[in-house]
Length: 110
Image: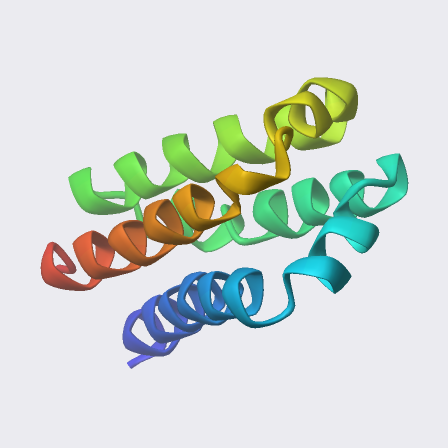
């Protein structure tokens, strides 16, 4: 039951992030263009990895690896994450990646 709740939360975070990138592109760019905003996102991603370590299994280890790499890059190297956001026209690409990641995660769930 907890695994289903966890996967639903991660799935919803990805879906809502993708929708937010599209619907509020200006607000997203303003918030994420600050180092503190990028680091906050990195910390949240690292927080989401904790249950993956606890449960183990191939699916959760892969999810752990993806979330950890993304979280560490944002937390420790926020300037690199900021450079990947420009030009601003790539917002729709990030949205597609978020939505595809959510769909893949949901399809491959244990």
